[in-house]
Length: 204
Image (cartoon, rainbow, N blue to C red; front, side, top):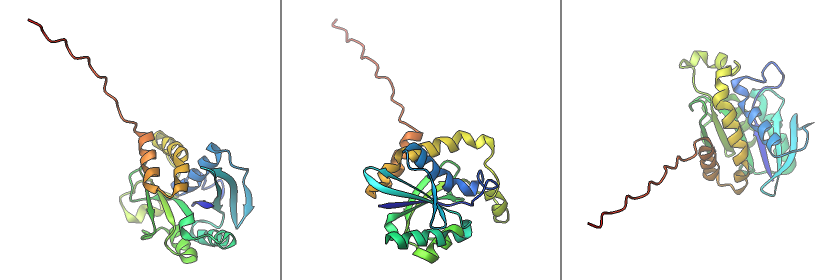
């Protein structure tokens, strides 16, 4: 079993915020792969389904970002999950918009949702980092992440979420590099140059 956690803030006020890209990612996996309707459990919204033949539970904590770990910790204890069975989708300031990286454990980069997670289940969970870019001034970060994605960002946001959801079954094999590579390939498929026929050689 895997627990896929999307980080964000509950309610319509925050639904389209940059900080809620984790919620958006989980929603797209649920939609793409026909998971069950959401229900309230573990202080969050959960949905069940399968990926690559494996049981999957998605969780969107409704405790607000800074207390995400309370919800995740409750679910992890109930199912007796180890950190490597928990994959967290979250916004990443240090990546350019539209970029995706996967890592296991590591630092928390000042992300309050990740800090809360670490406090409740430790740091060794898997992370899908979804780039939203940086405002360029640390004093503007809070306003930036709590602002809606502008309409112009749809050109990279929608393809990223689509590619991530399509590649999601690869996460079940714990081959995070394969997942990241698949997403990159979907977003930028290789360009095949037409093979030109060789000119016939002169027989003179």
